[in-house]
Image (cartoon, rainbow, N blue to C red; front, top):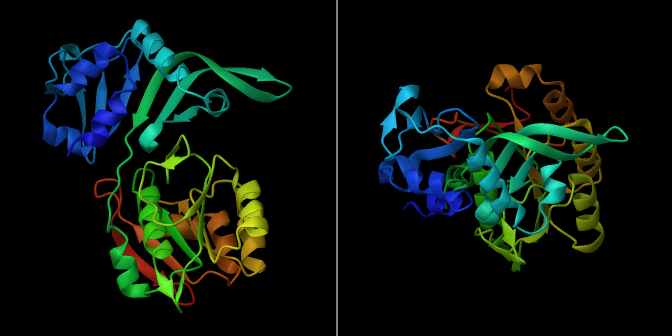
Length: 309
């Protein structure tokens, strides 16, 4: 039951790993993030609480009873991460996606060349987000929409389970047979979190999807359309105007898509110009709103976009 947690902490240095190994299984199952800050208490974040961790793996709300992470802990963990293959280009973006889809966020000093960040050094904190697979979490969506799931936007706050939902949608839709044919589905996995490709093998169950891993959305969507003849393209985290433009362009060309964007609630949806822009195109059919991170990977509501949201 704790395999995701154990897989994630295997990327940390021995001292931190051993302490985390001894926390209670119930906490392991509910841990979403682990934060290691130099000269600060070791902290974990569950669905609805945060705790400091003592040297013997006990939970505490008191910082003076907790294990203090040192610069050596950060250094040793970074050595482990640097020993992984092909991470330099990811480090310059401030995060690393690990085997099994876990994500490490890094805080440190940016090295800039010609106006672009080329590296992050002097790392002062590491935030490890644990990736979990919840098969069946998209069932409520299919119960309502059936196979009419194309051109759907999934909206949720950070850590609300958007990637988890998209992964399960990809699994289900790519294994669906319509008119005697499987639905050809392509996942643009820009950050390597949906399918978690490792040595060419998906670590997560994404059904029969083709996966373009570590491609930007712009390049990935263009390549998919040119070479893979997809019926549906799935991608995560539309976060900037370039992403928005390629999504709008693709929808306008008749490409069917399922993708996610950040917003905490309906009020934020109405205020986000990116979300308003894409909804105003008239090309999307459905909006799926997730619950917050206290209940990740669950559906709050599903709207038909031609109705008032």
